[in-house]
Amino acid sequence: MASPRPEDDMQLELEAVIGFNGHVPSGLISHPDREHLVYPLGCTVIIQSLNKHKQHFLHGHTNNVSCVATSKSGKYLASGQVTYMGFK
Image 1 (spheres, rainbow, N blue to C red):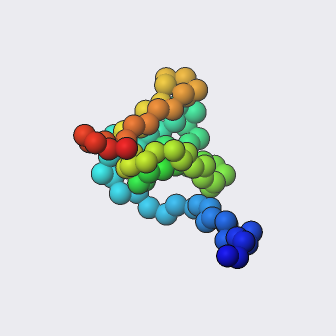
Image 2 (image 1 turned 90 degrees about the vertical axis):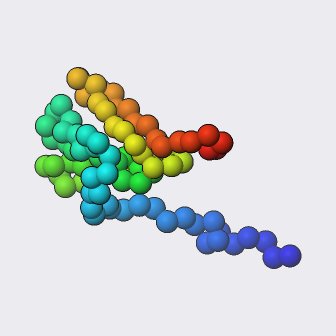
Image 3 (image 1 turned 180 degrees about the vertical axis):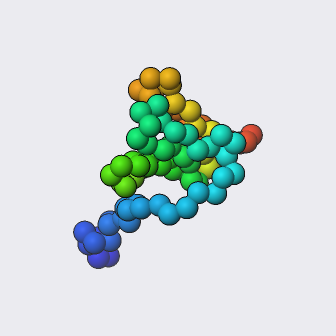
């Protein structure tokens, strides 16, 4: 059996997101600093810089993100996902 090659372990990395589906109620949030937008798309939460036109991605959900919220200070960001009985 051949040993795995390093290129076999390479994974794609998300570079940019284009789009917003609007399916999450109150899913487009203006961060309290007024310099960022926060929104979910699939299993990822996107933090979009309005001034620098850059995006940061928060991964970790195993199903579609169903809610996002920020604290009043903007220090904390919370997100939740869709789940159902028996979901792992």
